[in-house]
Each structure stands twice: as C-alpha cells, then as structure tokens.
Image (cartoon, rainbow, N blue to C red; front, side):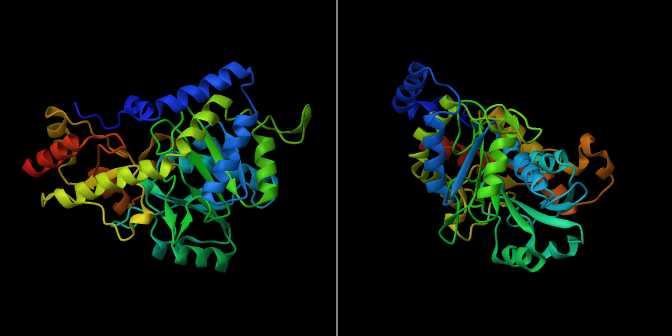
Amino acid sequence: MIKFLDLQKVTESHGKEINEAVTRVVNSGWYLQGKENENFEKNYSDYIGTKYTVGCANGLDALIWIFRAYVEMDVMKPGDEVIVPANTYIASILAISENGLVPVLVEPDINTYQIDPEKIEEAITSKTKAILIVHLYGQCAYTDKIGEICKKYNLKLIEDNAQAHGCKFNGRRTGSLGDAAGHSFYPGKNLGALGDGGAVTTNDEELAKVIRAVANYGSTKKYVFKYIGRNSRLDEIQATVLDVKLKHLDEDNAKRKAVAREYIEGIKNPNIVLPQIKDWDAHVFHIFPIRTEQRDELQKYLAENGVQTIIHYPIPPHKQECYKDWNSSSFPITEKIHAEELSLPISPVITEAEINEVIRLINAWK
C-alpha cells in the first residue's frame, strides 16, 4: 500500500533529534508554559517574519482567538461580517461563527482554488470588518489586489495558514502578510506536532497580549482574570517537537515540491486536471490536488491497486447540516471542486518508486 501520508516515516526522519528533545522535556519536570514554548515562539516568529507568536492548543483555536481578541478590543462586534472562501475547510468558518460574527462566502478561482479577488468587492457591505484568506492546499492565497481592497475599505486581513507553513509571497512568508494569522500543527501538516497544536502570528502587540490572556483562562497574570477565557495552550513536548522540525521545514518542503514536479511532468492522462503553478515559491504542496469528473471511480481504482488517496473535501461548508440555513445556496465553482477533487500521496518521505507507480496507474486509467 502506498500510503497517502506515512506519519511514522516522517517522524522517523527526524527521530534522533525528536527523541533527545522530548527526553529533555520529560526529565525537566516542566511541561507547560516554559522555556520550550518560549524558544519555539521566538524561532517561529523569526521564521515567519513577525514580532509575535502565541502558541495555543490547535489551529481552530488559533483562528477563534484572533477574532475573539478583535471583539475584546472593540475592533469587531457580534453581527459584523467576515469574508471567507466558500471552498475552505470548515474550521475557517467555525472560527468566525464562534465569535458571533457572520461568515460571508465568496467563490474561489477554479484555476488556483483560492478565493477569487475579483469577487470580493461585490460581497463587501457596511458590516464587513475583515477578510479571512485561506492558503488552501499549501498555495498562497494573497494577492496585491486583496491587499488593496483591505486598505480601500479599512478591513483586517487574517490568514488561515494551517496548510502553508513556509510558503512565500514575493519573498515574505505566509503568516506575515496580514494583520494576524492562525497556524495548525496537526500531525499531518507540513510542520506537524505529535498531537494537536496551533499558534497565532502577528505584529500587533496588543492583539498578541489579548490572545495570550484569553487562551490562558482570560488571565493577564496569575489568578487575575480580565477576560472570560478558556484553556488553550501549547504544551512543552509539542513545542520542542515543533522546534526540531522547524529546522528541517524548508528542506521537507523542497522534497514536496520535487514530488509535485514529477506528478505535473509525468501525469499525461487527459481526464485529469493538474494544479496550475505560476510561482513555485508560492506553494508548499501540503496537498497535491487533482480533479476529474470521475473522481470516485478513480479513487476506487487507485485503492484497488494499492494507492491511498483522500478527498479534500467531499461536502462543501454550505451543504453541511451545521450551516443548514445555507443549504439551498448555490456556489457552483465550489461545488465543482468538491465534487471532483482528489488528493494524491505526497510527503517528504514518499519514495521514487511510489511516485512512479502513482503516475503509471493514473496514466493507465481510462
């Protein structure tokens, strides 16, 4: 079986360093809010290019805390609108709803799968306070036009960087392009922990302070509670694992890009729509998405021949039961992507033989 992602091999590739780091933390007797977090937050800020990183429990919380902090700071209030791509993973939208804000869905560009900058302005109203861009599949969603729209309408720009650690736009890392960014360190991410983990990056000192407090029971100092907060902290073991893997992130991303190049150059089946890449720096291939109208048949064929694939994502957010008020809405581009997308195996540890077998099977499929 060619696994979609072999997490055991990914961990083993940095195993010695990870084992040493985890053993150090275990033996230290300090497991929360210690030096490992401080080190990782500093190193991640330096890597992303922001002044502040605030670790938290997971990627969804990272986005929730950004919006919660803006509400606490009176930058936003319940009922305000946030523009978000219609084809994103539901976590992006949940974070908006969690804070009493209103998600406004905008269709993506069918060629990039990122929010279509040409469709954003028509969705802006007097209640719009922010745009949440999602660097979906590992590709940069930011464009100069989006930046110009934010300036024109005085909107906050928030990045969902859960899938794009290390991605760049004109030399700058995603996660540093807007006012704040949420990051997920779920194990399968390009920068993945050995469990859940997340972080917020920003250059806004007040925002960082509010997020750090809200995610720590609402506490600004021990036993003093300014906000009605929650417990959402990155533990020391996950922080040290992330710090180890951060040193190898660019190298691992380069391997992902090499796999993507082989797929793009090798897959010749006319029934397959391949990713369109204009700037290789602007994609880190968390996912390698292809499209075909016979997606389910292709997935079954590949599985029968020993290749594991995943659909990202089978049901779009506006068709989910939890957003039943949207169920009658029509987003045809989003629906087309969700009906046709299939993700091929890609990782820093996939072998040349496995890559060639995937290509061979797809080219042989009719």
